[in-house]
Image: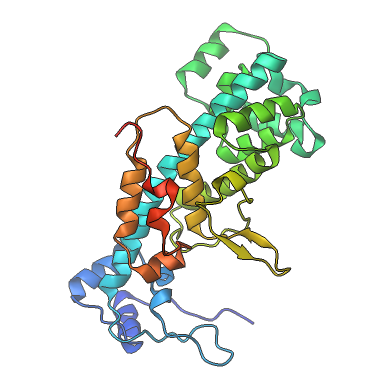
Length: 313
């Protein structure tokens, strides 16, 4: 089938929304939202306001009674604020993982352990990753990289603790997963408070996926992750479980579980933080239906990870 849709102007877009049953409110404000955010991006946030489709239709394209553009933009703003908080938390976890993997790896295998292909499984494609790292070094304007290049001629790569500063979370996750020395990986797991190597690897993959959504300003609040978090028994009282197609108990793949795990990971860090308080306050602003769409259980506020006091205010 050939794509034949033509672009619509702001006036036409407002007319479409009105015909479908949305109260767009003040036209000047509505026009500004469509100009600054865009019809297509906002459409992801008015989907929950549409009536269920009938028959074989994918969407009804008809809004529930009393749906307003203001309610849609309010949800959009909430999602934006949520992304900022989640990105903050993932950044802290990423820095922690980088610090501990670098520490354990360099002490076990030397300052330039990343250059030794014998330390990594074939799944990494070691040569390709070194090329990517070399490009990052060449393009870097970081003072510590400039200092290394000006002072040293060999090896060609900076030491591991500098090299990892140039890796994305996704790249770091790949290096970690390919590390052959399980004592290094287990050490990182202990530092993070995660019980097994497999769980560390799985958590990093999910967090990398969520980070990419946040970094690219994607819809986050009611997202279902492609990869599920693993069952982490020590976090069982805080997580929400569901059944898969084989009737096996698995972690629910909505955002709630990601937030609960992030709180546990942050609690392992001895730094002042009001993150839990700020996150909880933001979540409490939303309706019960919206929280359920995020995977929140009805008793979430009384679960241990949400009710503990911040260690340092």
